[in-house]
Image (tube, rainbow, N blue to C red; front, side):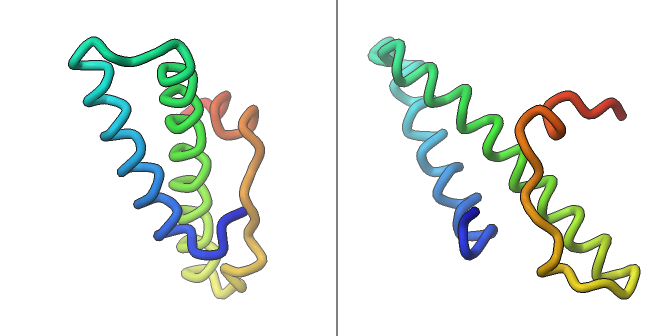
Length: 79
């Protein structure tokens, strides 16, 4: 897990934008598309982490004790 989730999210977003530019210009490779799909999952996991940490803090818990959940849990969560 990244030391600073906010900074990691910003890095992922910057990479995502770069890859979307390649895709929109028709220059993306299969590995670029695979990386883009992985970035989507990683962003979902880190946004989930931030939401859960905020919730823990509001409930009086220690947000640092909240860890990153696995891909299957985050991606298959039903709202």
